[in-house]
Amino acid sequence: MGRGRLRILVFFFIPVLVLFGIGLVFGPLGSSFLGKKPPSIFQVPRPTIELPSESIFHVGHFSVTNTLIASWFTIIVLVVLSFVFTYKMKLIPGRRQGMAETIVEGLLNFVESVCSKKHARMLFPGVATIFIYVISNAYLALLPFFGSIGIIEHDGKFAPLFRSANTDVNVPLSIAIMSFIFVESWGMRSVGVLHYLSEFINVGQMGQGLKQLLTGKIGLAMMNIVFGFISLFVGVLEIFSHLTRMLSFTFRLFGNMTAGEILILVSCFLIPLVFTIPFYGLELLIGMIQALIFSGLTLVFGTIAVSPHEETE
Image 1 (tube, rainbow, N blue to C red):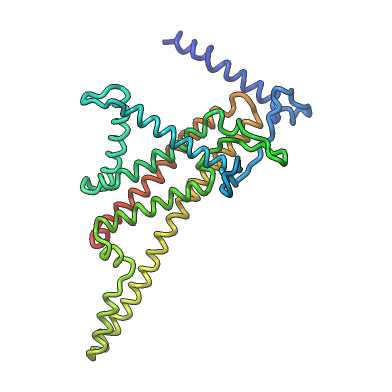
Image 2 (image 1 turned 90 degrees about the horizontal axis):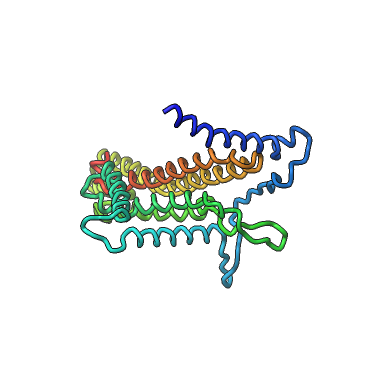
């Protein structure tokens, strides 16, 4: 046991510490303290942060950006993996099919742990798609060719060919819109369109008050009209809360993914070589958390939507 630990220390930790020391001393951070220019091999280009995605080429009037290319790349990878994992499926699964079934079963158990089995099959495709797409965008963005391969624009700026799709506000916004559509369609499908919409636009009590007003029941009519107006106001607030979910979903994912990309760029610039490795591990964790939050909140809101209004209260 002691020799095994000693080998790990000698062959892994010591070289990493040596590389870290070299990057610290000869990198831009150490060289600035020493008042010297860093060697050419350690001269990492100063990171430039561009919040809008860069255009790579145009198809007519349509601009194809690097984040759009990255999202296409994610879709292609997922399609290829789904074909590989499900090719020639058998009753007794092999390793590839077993891995795919493990992922699907894990996500299905996650959905069933929040909502009932009655609605789990309906909510599962949307929730699982959001989780897989968000985490795939985050993890594929950590590949070496993201941000390093690109073109030189007319003004001399470098535009990477691949950039994390989650750092383009349009991608999180599109996922948030689909999440909103999923939740509302699940609610209408489960409890009925009219019953679901009545939770937002409830004019029954106000109509009852108007009828009572015509029949001479003034006191009871005024009370129902007032409470009916309050119900309408609460319904408007509920509509507003449903719409603001898209904003919170969008900027939560966009902000965290953009901050992570900036952190990696800055750490790689200040201390080259191995200093960025821990931040890659942190990005793996953040990508998992953001995918869980996005899909989990969609699942929670979907569970509330498919439950009758009386049960929700």
